Length: 253
Ligand SMILES: [Zn+2]
Ligand SMILES: [Zn+2]
Image 1 (cartoon, rainbow, N blue to C red):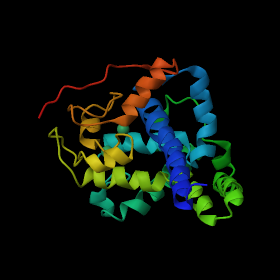
Image 2 (image 1 turned 90 degrees about the horizontal axis):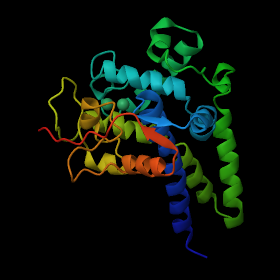
Image 3 (image 1 turned 90 degrees about the vertical axis):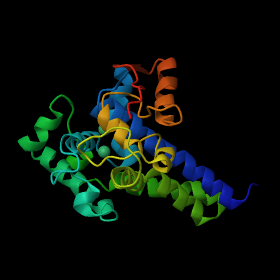
């Protein structure tokens, strides 16, 4: 049998990838920006299953993210490090997400109008205050997977990977708006952070993305690697998605 650390690493890698494909490809590029169009059955599956896989409601996430674009790095930005500090953004983003979620559940216009084109409700789990259920289920699955190995770290690796959204979000929201270089001189403080981009399927190219939020591709220079875009290309080859707009790739320093 392979060493236990290798098993933990593999379990974490697979579950982390599942989580970030949901957030970056489905929630972000498809639902929030319409940069890619999911096949109707896939869109329906993502909307229904997203909260179970990630613990995050797709509509509330899209609402918060669109506000991040319209109010980027102003005092109304839901997770700018200029408002919360580099490390404070970790909790700041979670509090802002909760505000968006509660605002949508109560039908507050400020939030509802941001996502009025998304014709599906906030998940019933959140409407019935059962947000913790996916977390408990994944904890149970993690323990089940770890049992044959008789090692609790396998369960820890599974749970942290499946529920890695706060860490991914912090890297993108905090580091992607504080540390890195810029290809475009935008009024916000967005940055391209290569290490974050490698860890988040290209999401770390925040400066590029803020310049072309409708592009399915977040890299613009030949040496910038947006692995999320290539997953989108694979999905397009498989007939799962279409691109609404061509990928923007013209560098403009
Ligand atoms: Zn941003
Ligand atoms: Zn975006």
